[in-house]
Length: 346
Length: 267
Ligand SMILES: Cc1cc2nc3c(=O)[nH]c(=O)nc-3n(C[C@H](O)[C@H](O)[C@H](O)COP(=O)(O)OP(=O)(O)OC[C@H]3O[C@@H](n4cnc5c(N)ncnc54)[C@H](O)[C@@H]3O)c2cc1C
Ligand SMILES: Nc1ncnc2c1ncn2[C@@H]1O[C@H](COP(=O)(O)O)[C@@H](O)[C@H]1O
Image (cartoon, rainbow over all chains, first blue to last red; front, side):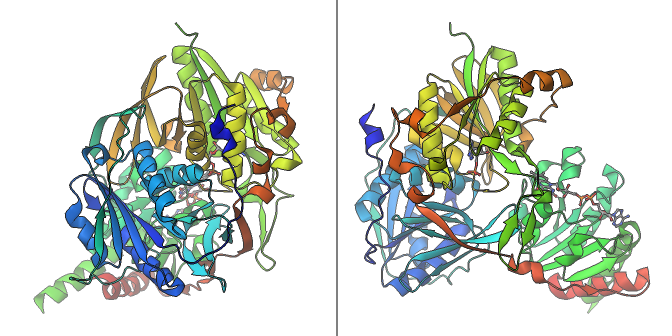
């Protein structure tokens, strides 16, 4: 048996609040994912309560300028790993370097964005460290002993669960757009610590191509007009597009229409699609199945248009319109255009 | 030349979410009325394996950890094209979190060695962590690619996949042994034929308990008591308590009210 298998031990360690709060700073193509700033916001709150430092680990290539920004958003220290070998995300390379850092700095809490990169990376790190990891958290608190209370949806969003971790670091991935970022403070003091990068030459994977997607980005959208099986044919998405265009938003969809090939999968909202949190979500002809609600129930304002007064979508809506989307949408577009032109002439 | 690829598909039996009743007052769920099925995303993983096998030849083993009833899920997987099935079942495994689950599964994979490719679903509909796949890969010390939306090419030595991260698509070539997790967009799982179903009814399922893994595993790492995370409490989602204002009037009036509301909110 390899010695590796004997190292395993999940013993509970003594709780000492000397460890820092560590945040993974995620970048893709040199651009920092905004969830990073939100994690720094929540992280600085937790660090202050525990009386420890907020630190951030940042991996990539040619990113030292961006590292300073992490300090402006609240990090006291940034561990910078800058190397061509880290230019694109590679789970093995990232894990190797981060695991070594965690063993050295022994953070109390380690937060990672619940993005696809984060959810691919965090479990590898947690397994390597033999520590607990809570996925897709929507809230984080501390109990009276300073232990992390992690709150996350489970059972496709039907229930919320509070999770605690007995090992250290307490690791969690955190959903985008649920935590508040700190205001950027130019000139805020902190240190960037250049770390020596361990280059894993052969990871068993090779990136053959990387294509920047020009598809809609639902996660970032402020207004989403979504259609469901209330639509009768693919062309009718035009109705939703018009409304979305009038509001400066994008079009979303429930799953059946994506599965039927009426619209691309990048438009799908829900458990097996995107989780969104726009300022306004307009659901047109969507019944409100739990898997759909999972992806949009935290939107700021939800407007539902449905023929059926008993449709479950109305249970999560702020404004309910009982009616035929084919009659209401064109009228809404007209009204909105009227309002816009009135404002312009003023 | 190797005789095709040896693949292991990780499948979990899950309750049919639509039929689980949630008692929000007590924070409990009642699964008694719900049937149990293969986690939908694991069907995509299985279908991907079957399609690979059709191309390169080989063998598919489905592996699951769960209660004895999970045998049914494995029989379903056999009807859908798997060749062998292994169920890890033992009270010692019960209540495991993702780390303990992944550890247990990785021990069983060791026991099944050698293998080329492990396939997992993107996530489960009950646990919904997407963690077990990458954690298994780490325990085994093999590379993984998560969120595979398409298998572009495969031969006896490597697989080429396309997956989307946040802003970009990545085409990645990965050698064996390795692991992928697949999304529902990877394929459409086919339905088993009646003949396959009948054949699978009679098929043997290998059952392993903690003792069967003792030559490989550390017992102190199984089950609830050795899981680093613990669910302290469950309750109803707070945002489900919105109270909708029903917009009244003629269609015209409704449209006007919503339009002015939208103008206020976002214009
Ligand atoms: C593992 C799994 C994952 C899933 N993931 C997702 C996911 O990510 N996203 C998702 O959306 N679903 C998902 N689903 C599917 C989900 O369970 C539902 O089947 C789906 O959301 C229903 O889509 P719908 O509301 O468009 O259709 P329906 O449920 O058929 O509802 C159509 C609605 O349109 C209304 N309607 C009809 N005509 C009109 C009209 N002229 N004007 C106004 N209203 C009208 C009807 O009253 C009805 O309420 C998933 C399911 C599973 C099992
Ligand atoms: N108990 C289990 N037995 C077998 N495979 C599992 C089990 N739990 C999770 N998996 C696999 O890991 C994937 C991710 O599960 P999860 O981390 O629970 O979201 C699933 O789609 C399965 O392929």
